[in-house]
Length: 218
Image 1 (cartoon, rainbow, N blue to C red):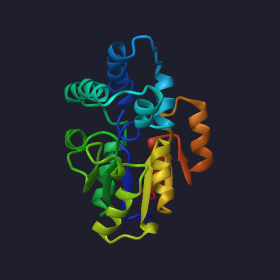
Image 2 (image 1 turned 60 degrees about the vertical axis):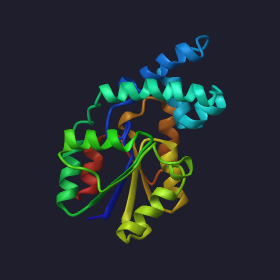
Image 3 (image 1 turned 90 degrees about the vertical axis):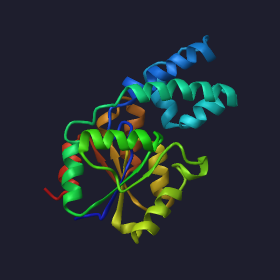
Image 4 (image 1 turned 30 degrees about the vertical axis):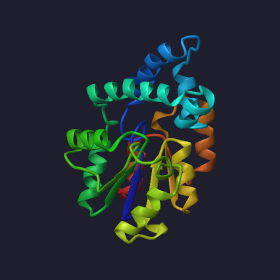
């Protein structure tokens, strides 16, 4: 086994959630909070890439605390009503990796409750550890807190872990702890994002099958 622990993003890495859940819920909130602003799916993806979702809400759209709570409620309703599909082949990858003795940790801007639901429903197991949106901001990626806690919990060093993520916050988190980073390229639809991830990642995988062959030594 190349790595004892996989640190996985959830949205647009494991599950297809942005087009079906995160974007439409945000558009719904935007119609009430900023009706003069139209945001395409590509715009939304770009902003979530940089400056990140928090930056989009606080710095770009300048949501107040009350407005952020309203947006959160709209999003929460969408998430509760919809369980996104995993990318084809991803559940099988997870099961085989676990059978081989691997550790699965999830670091995501979704909440732990939904991540647990999705893994239980589609993979028949729960991740060993989850760091979700419900944590304080300094404990979420791109901060190093999740990586440090994973290393402590499972007595790992930085050469025994790999971060898989489609986004810059995951890349920045991995770099903060000198962890190998693999880009999940199967969700990329914006050329500029793909180019950035190809240039700055240790590995770039265009399909789930490519990553599966790499991580399981097939």
